[in-house]
Length: 417
Ligand SMILES: Nc1ncnc2c1ncn2[C@@H]1O[C@H](COP(=O)(O)OP(=O)(O)O)[C@@H](O)[C@H]1O
Ligand SMILES: [Mg+2]
Image (cartoon, rainbow, N blue to C red):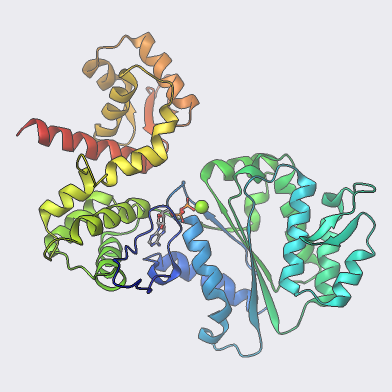
């Protein structure tokens, strides 16, 4: 899609609403090195498993997609001739019970192994399962507790149909719902341990989680985390951010756009390295710039970030509406926004109660109630509260804090004109 030019139409290559196209993937050198190491180990039958942990919109799915594309070539880069990767990618999405999850996993291993006739025959003989249009299905007569047999079945499949020249990468994305199912961490742990025990160490799992999902998995099974190497995704560096904006504008958008050096620096700085924010700024920069004379400068950036009343929504408003507005639904008092804005603009990420009480016209009791609501909704987190440490509040999602900071800066700037 990226390189396609539709009869002289312009083409905006930024993707604020989707995982990034692997060809435009920016940065993450260190994280990729860790994952590549695990891939190479797995090619050598010494599998390692990876847990990619990051808040929403920091790029878990983008990274997973990138690995999915690159894994089949890793053996060449590592100069290993005899083995290559097969990859399966699972978005768990709305899966709600363990047997259903087990069935999805079983189907993915069928995909990994390729569907030979023998394998199909083998599955058909298993009581309670059948092969339908969607792959392996429950046969309906008598529901089997697939979760209890999953490890055993996967191992049988791998032992009988796995190939010596193959390593298998299984990517599990969108695990929020899965992490809510009691027993889910156990299911995965049993499977990983069974693979290990049977010396099926050419199988690697890469699982993406938010910190909240991770906590739930660990609550479900405390030793879950020990099976993995953690790869934490933070914001991109300034240099990575600039590289992404510059290259996407200059090489992948149609028409290609140039941007002034200083404006590039400012755009990267404003984004704080949040990839979703960079995509949004880039998207609107292109929309502002495609009808103007290049290069893009300070005025174009301001419009791309703040928008105007008609055609340009702007990055701030777009982000806020898409990701954070609904978290505040039903909270009609303007004080909620004031509280959030004050916490965002406190010099440290952790904001104590004092500046809130000083700067806002609010009683201690009302502050407790309102912050309680914001914590309940997962917008804020609370720390301290013991005798030694005062209560402090922080944004759960750091990108949310950044949006409020920039919003305040914009309002101040407008006010001072
Ligand atoms: N490495 C990257 N390079 C460029 N854009 C990225 C990168 N990682 C994420 N993005 C962008 O950030 C936004 C959120 O990414 P996504 O992978 O959906 O995050 P998550 O799965 O953690 O919620 C998307 O707009 C995506 O295009
Ligand atoms: Mg995702």
